[in-house]
Image (tube, rainbow, N blue to C red; front, side):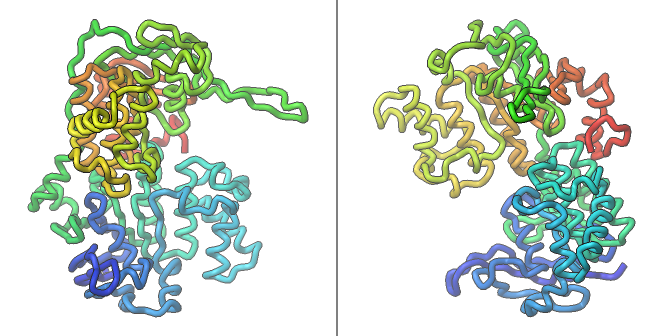
Length: 541
């Protein structure tokens, strides 16, 4: 194999002259034609900065290269003119980003966005571009490609949006595809499908792939070579099999051991029920015509029974759109539903807003993305204090500060940090703040809606251990929603498998994971633990 990209002693700094902050230091790696190279490490290790340096897409002149060389097909990229880089970007090297919804223009149709690439780089006519766009959408496995041309990004699922991004990246038959966390924002079944797609496209088109990820399972499945990054440096590099079978560096061994594991805290089978529902339904009407008559319903939750006991965790799994979050919002009486709901033996279905207000303190939520769920304008103390003020708890200002400090200690944060703002914390620390905000009110029932999916694997393990400890200390009842089945197994006593608003399978965690009864559950397991895409039609594509 010949080398396509040769990175030698690359350094990257950010800031003004004399005040530079090093982000990448003396990084070297090679990407061979037709092969997959992986960069792994925790958030902030320099993976994406190294990749963006290849395309010279950093915010120059705020970013600079104190040293190093990047040869693309034998030509130096550092210091190259814009004209030279335009010949590389899109033509020789393309990139797929983590979150397609922020990469695609929400105001333009799918056809227009792919056509833009074809007009710019190939000078095709409108009819030629349309034919090529359809061809690309078929290539990436988008069903009913011709009918999707006029669709906007919000009309597609997460997996479909990522397929469109891959189609755009492949428009000019690049020699290298840089995939920056391409599967982090999708559920396990879509992840398996996208990885299978990338491997198939690589074999058919002969392109190289630079895979940036924190998921070591994906690296083992996809890559030939791997480089492990920490604090802007490569601490270990080599063939995947050698690195995984015999890691030499302490940091690499830590990453290998960081996968969420263990078992849920032992809870009494006779524990009282905290939250329950019978035959719960959430139907959204579909209205058409001049008079907006209801012609049908979207059955987001369709006749589900739930029973969550003190000290127990009920895990809810399924593909995106299966109704998991809707179920949680219905239990919390945040959306309209039908069917009896009981909290602590009290019937709350039909209760007014004012009647529910005193109970809100005992029912809390921790969301998926801590950066989106925390106000950037409030300090950590103000964020946590807000619940105390709403419920008239905690006494005076000094007493509330003391309660906040104690809660921060409980979730593993320093009390001295309470006057900082969310942007000053890492992703894992922000999620601890979100957990502290819920815990300060001493709840009895907590909905955990994908609380670990936006985090590195090592941080995931820490958050799982924290949640397990808090549950044990306070006898909490958890409803845990996730598409990461490893985390679900580590936390859950009981598991509900959902699809299209219905329960496909329900039972103890051991029963569901060790002896799944349905094709759908088996497909989820294969996607999560083996990264194997389903071909039977049991899951969506």
